[in-house]
Image (cartoon, rainbow, N blue to C red):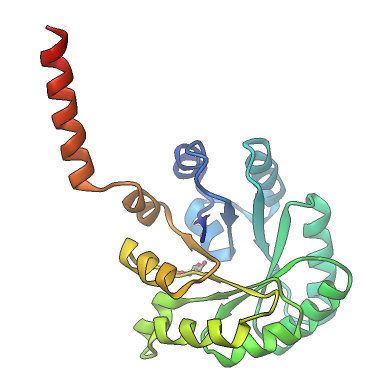
Length: 215
Ligand code: G3P
């Protein structure tokens, strides 16, 4: 399973990207807003990420109709061949995703809230779908169950689940056991993934022993 960072805040991203453990960065207008990044500043953020060796950068279209989504997607892809275009799973978005996929542009269909949308994203030729697991659960659906169904629907296809809207490291553990291809997590969950209190305690024991052995 691949790990991605769902973040646009350079101060949060830098130390996590420096671990080399994250395959890329995902963004959307909410993530940009949380990170204080204006739309006009997105190319600069993409270049900053690529210069740090980020393998994949996901950027979301903002247009409403299919023609303009396609045009925007092509502009985003022109920034780099490491840019993946994110498009919400609306009818216009799926229509645009199909056209962009036919043009060889990798697409992630996002804001997915139901297993049926795995079917439509598959028909659109999407490389990824991003189910909003936390939001599904908070809005009365069982997010993990929906993802399990998406996994079964996508078995054998070239469309993978990149699960998003995750609230804890436990969400990541459960999704990994479901076999999802990737997850994207905010900086707090990313840090939680890297921190195990019992490991920290064991290292403190090692350090005490080393100090004593050096005396
Ligand atoms: O990438 C998905 C993210 O923007 C939505 O997650 O945390 O707002 O539910 P969240």
